[in-house]
Amino acid sequence: MRKQENCIFCKIATGEIPTKMVWEDDNIVAFHDLNPQADYHVLLVPKHHSESILTLAEDEEGQTVIGQLLQAVLKVAKILGLTDSGFRLIINCGPGAGQTVMHLHIHMLAGRDLNENLV
Ligand code: 5GP
Ligand code: ZN
Image (cartoon, rainbow, N blue to C red; front, side):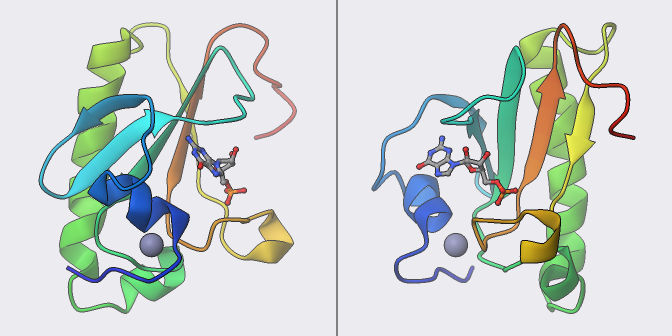
């Protein structure tokens, strides 16, 4: 499992930086975003460092990690009680799409007033 020096999400994944954890297993961490954009705003992050969905897809471990991430979505949705009310997933890929932390993550957003104009 790859780690990268000075990567904030690698540090959260190893517990070096404390965070409001929602769920964790050997491969994935899910924690509340520091700057929430909705009532619920959780980040799902693989412990294996890869910059984006593009680099992960061409990574040897990547196929497994993609599956683990999607399994984690179901677990976190159940924990937060969102399976009936629904939620939105966003993956920013690259600075042009607003990616600021260069360690792949899924934003899980839910609650009142989700902007219906954004997909
Ligand atoms: P991006 O713009 O890269 O898709 O999303 C990065 C997200 O990480 C942002 O929503 C930002 O608020 C969140 N974030 C950045 N640093 C930290 C941190 O140290 N802790 C937590 N919990 N969230 C962070
Ligand atoms: Zn990282």
